[in-house]
Length: 90
Image (cartoon, rainbow, N blue to C red; front, top):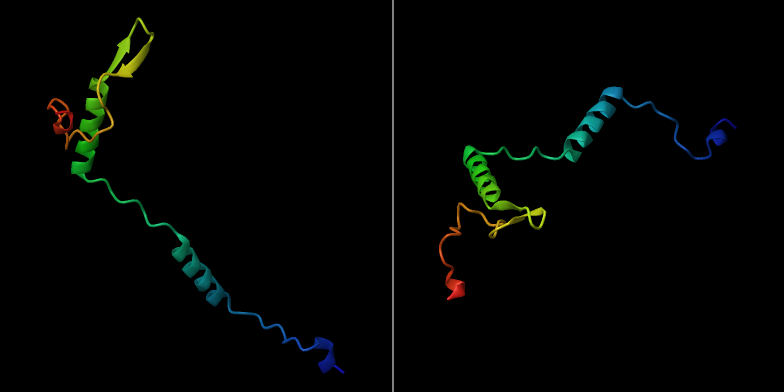
C-alpha cells in the first residue's frame, strides 16, 4: 500500500546545491549583454570635432527669439567639407 501512495510520481531527490549554483551562474553569463565597445582616441576626436562644428553653426536670432543652425549640421564633418560646393548642385 505504501507504493500506491505516490501515484506513479518519483520520490523527491534533493539536488546538489553546487550543481544548481553552477547552472544558475552559467545562465547568468549567457544572458548578460557584452560590454559596449571602448571609444578609441580617434573616435573621441571625431566626436569632439563634429560637436565643435555643430556649435559653430548654431546661432541665436534676437528678432525671432530663438536659435537655429545656419547650415547643414547632421553630417560627419571629418568626411565632408561644407565649404565646398556640392557636385549635386551643378
